[in-house]
Length: 393
Image 1: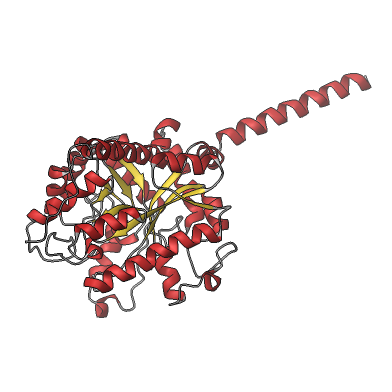
Image 2 (image 1 turned 45 degrees about the vertical axis):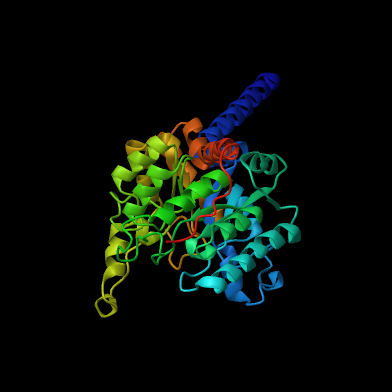
């Protein structure tokens, strides 16, 4: 009898163990974290370099020692690890109010931050210049660190300066920030050029020749369409969402989503509350006096997933990525407060029925494909095209 009861007990333990394992495999957050270990999550935009500058004008890492928790920031190494980051485009943002030589100098200083951070924390970060570099870093347990320039004002109307930024590691350039350039219109400004000027088109061609991704976040709809017409390589939107869901100029209209799909590009959905929730956007647009005393609405993780759903419907699963804009935002999406929270969004996509292979595309495979295609276009163009000597009109 004792042996019989013991056998029953063992069977019971075995059933409980199998049940527990099945439950863990079925848990969306557990599955999400497993996917992050299989595929590099590549985020399109993080403003830590500018946040560091805000904390210390001398850009001293000891003032933001991110190897441990830094509550004043949205980014530090422990939370990057929790978030499952495999690749990061670090924004070397320079305000568009800075122009000429000042813009060039400050952008160089921001690039210096990215290079120095990979040397200060080499066990975590590694400079990456190609898709293969990102994959190698990921396999080695490091975060492939890419450089993204946020605004064409940084090149001071000089294609030679553009080339030198590429030589220093810049792998995308957002054509404008919030203000128009002499050669391109921005989303947040009144139209002046009507999209891209002839020199603006030449900037895109030279970026194609170099292998630098053309980033269309921040630009006007006309500039988006012009760049998509001119570019021979896939473009990206490093941190933008769907205009049909949240009607603000910074988001991507449906017709441009369709053009981006034809181009082979990727829209990297951002976590900026005012670009995610129409209620937040409408509230933010009210005069300050009208907002006083009112409880501001919140954007939610589910709404971010709604943008992903919409882009999948209009452009297709091959044209979606993620671009959080952490440490470049003053408000946060509920559930996506810092870089540790990416698995929660992945879990939401699992709950919505996204297949693992499709989620991997969103996490990073789509961006890696775009990078490889841009590299291939550059290799082809460099056989027949010399560096451009065009100057601005």
